[in-house]
Length: 374
Length: 91
Image (cartoon, rainbow over all chains, first blue to last red; front, side, top):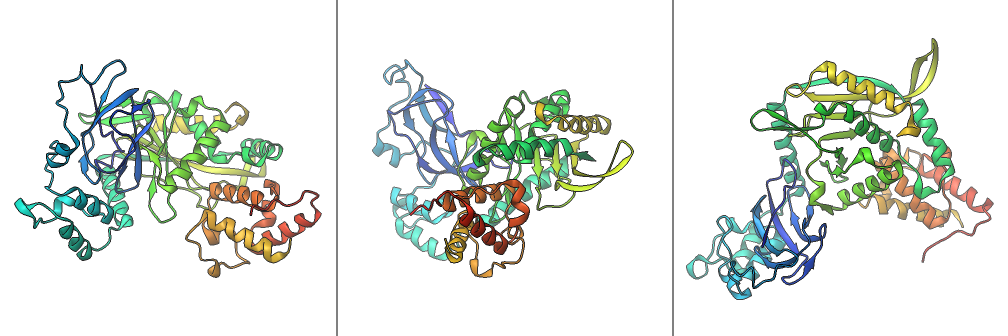
């Protein structure tokens, strides 16, 4: 029997409200399959299963808010059958509703009332019950719904960002470096590539920048990882990068682009496009919300010259890129016009020093001179 | 295709990218990307959507010519009349 726990939803997210089960007991699930949808302050997140298994039992109901790490389902490993796993007493649907497996302090609430509370965005633990033994009834939920102001997603988003960024500035001794990088070769290569390929295969400069960061990190591992409790640095094992993506309604998310160093530019482009689209439509997966060893923020061509970012804990560095623009440049003693970008590194002084960070930015510049090798 | 039809296709494509857009407030002589706050990924999606709607794939080299709503419609109108390919308009 496998206990499936609510996975981590990013450093600034420690609980989630179950919106929907995508599976039923008895159903076979594959590794990577979405089994549930959970709401967080920032977005609805699709929870993926990390085992090939059969669903034995769902432990929480729709509308329940639980902390990260809470068992939410029991799964049978391949080959295991329900009778061999009989140590967990089978709980009928009826019993499950009446005596739900205790998860934190759960309010006594009728299923219909719970469903309605979830629809209204009300926290059932805060409602007063007028039914027998203080059970919360549908009427209680409806009247609380009329009294409550509608939940403000933007405000929840701001609070979440405020918490993560305050923690960062409180705990992380940041140092900052900036370097202007010449992108003449990169932009010429990109324009030539985009001119000869179909519209659907056009690449954006962001993809080159992300790939170059991932490759440069291989030589500078102390910028790629996590500062853990107990004052130790844990290097990341791969090249998973967080990508800061702004939302049209305000706020931002930094979901993960996996294995950036190992992927081709076209593959990264299609994954980035997909990630941006799903971030903005609110369909991210749990595996995309945590685990990045570093975050990259690219303000893009409508932006400003320089961005100096705030590190996303527990990461130890953040790379920022301002607007790619044509600027005066001296090349082999001649003044010329060159597309350039100001790169910046915000890094955690506990994990690295300025000299190390400077060498990283210089390496990044070198890599971008040979776009055909990215 | 006439100007009005192209214009409505452009606005529909824009609404697909930026659902909150108030078309009435859009100034035709200003940078479209600034007016609608389109980042480079939004812009690429928009160019793709235009290609699906009017059958014209605007090359990157021509981006300078299509910066405002007015110049974009001019551009599509001109390419539409010179292009041998029939425009693809989904119903």
